[in-house]
Image 1 (cartoon, rainbow, N blue to C red):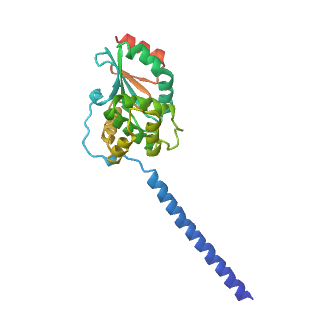
Image 2 (image 1 turned 30 degrees about the vertical axis):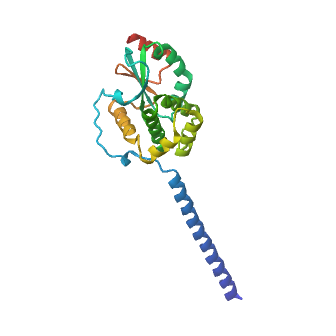
Length: 232
């Protein structure tokens, strides 16, 4: 009787151990599948020496809006996952454009500082790709991604989301071409270069605006207006 109990106990132990092993294997499979879906490019994935000097912003490579002959150059450093960047854009961009861009008083440049998550880099890459594809498509994307921004601490700017965003909100963009470009890691070098520009010039948070070499962290529209007007 005792022997039978021991055998039953042993069988139960083997079954429990086997089930635990199967669960571990299943968990590993699920995790590996999740990882493959959520793999994002890193700056180590792109070669090429980047040389940037302090005070250099490589404006000839940056997305911009406004007359190149405008007397004041405004540079905005952004991360598309940043809620403060989203708030500034959604609340102030149209007013800023009416007051300074459309009147020829200022030109605005966008420089990427994608530091908030692995998907920040991919969101910035899509912007770079669209800028080369169609400059108006870039600005459609720039506003659309802020209006559809996810939670800062979640990984939401994955490829599926970004391509659907283009299909739904970027009529001048081509999601198929963007998808092909992402496979080739196009735009990654430019984003890496932007990141170095940010570091070399001492930008530590977003949104940061640079006007005539001076940095201003998350200024109000009124403050930025005064700064621009004082430099005209």
